[in-house]
Length: 359
Image (cartoon, rainbow, N blue to C red):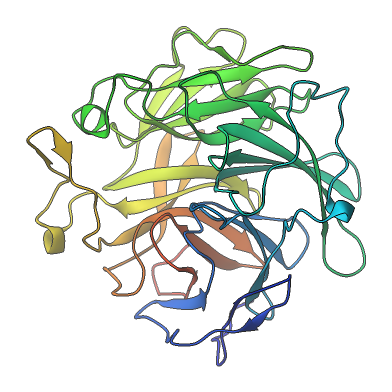
C-alpha cells in the first residue's frame, strides 16, 4: 500500500539537479536514497510527494526530496530569487544564511495558507540561529524563500524547533554551557526550552523545562501543550504552555532513545536508536567522563505517542544495518516511512514487515 522497492536510487546533485547515486544497495529492511549528508531531521510536506531533509554538517543545508522518484537536490542555494527578508518581523537578523556554511539540524513546518507554509530550521553554520523560510506549493516542485532569522542567546546551541499558530517559536538546547553529553546520559539536567514570541527582542528560557538532554520538540494540535524529548531519560515530557513550571506527564519510550518528534500523517512519531544493543555492548556507557559517541551501529525504532494512554507504541523496528546508523527522525509520506540520520550519508525508507503498524 504505497510501497515499492527502488531499482534505481538517486542522490544529491549540484545546482538543484538530481543525479544518480552510486553504491547504494538496499539493506536488510531499508532502502536508501544516497547523497544527503547527515539528514538529521526529516519532515513531510502534507498532501504531497515531497520531503524536506536537513543536513547536519557545514554546507549540507537543506534538501528537497521527491519520494516518488526517490531522489534529492540542494534546495537553498542563496540565489536572489530565494531571498526576500521580512525586516519588520525579524529586524535583528544580520542577513541571509550563507549556503556554503549552512549547517541545518532540527526542522519545523507549519501551514499558513492553502499554498504557503513556514519552515523553521536550526542552523549552526556561521551563527547559532533559527532560519525562517516560506515554502510555496502548487504546480511543480515547492519553492523556498528565506525570510529572516532569530539569533540564539549567547552561548546557547539550538537542537530542535517548533511553533504555535500564533507565531510563538520554541527551541530546545541539549547542553547548556558547563554541561556535557555525559551529564545527560547519567540523568543530570543539562538543557532547556527557549521561547520567542512575535515582537520579542530575544529568546527566553521557560522555567521548569530544564531536562537531561532536551532534544526533539513538538507542539500539540490544541495549541495548549508541547512535547519535549528528554534524551537522558529516553522519555517524552509534556508541558502546558500557560505554566511550564511543572510537567504534566513523562512518557517513557519502550527500549529505545527517541530523538526528534513530529506530527506526520496525523500521527505523533518519534525515532531513535536501540537503548540496549548487544552488538554494541549493551547500554550507552560513560568512560572517564566521556559518553560513548554511538558510532557502533545500533538497532533502530520508530514509535508513536498515544496521548490518551500516555504510552509509546512501536511502529517499526530493525536490527543494526551496516550502511545506516544514528536514526534521529521519521516521517510518513503516502504510507511510506522515511528515516533521517545524524550520522549517515543517506536517507532510508522502511520496507514493511509483518509487525509494522504504520500501513
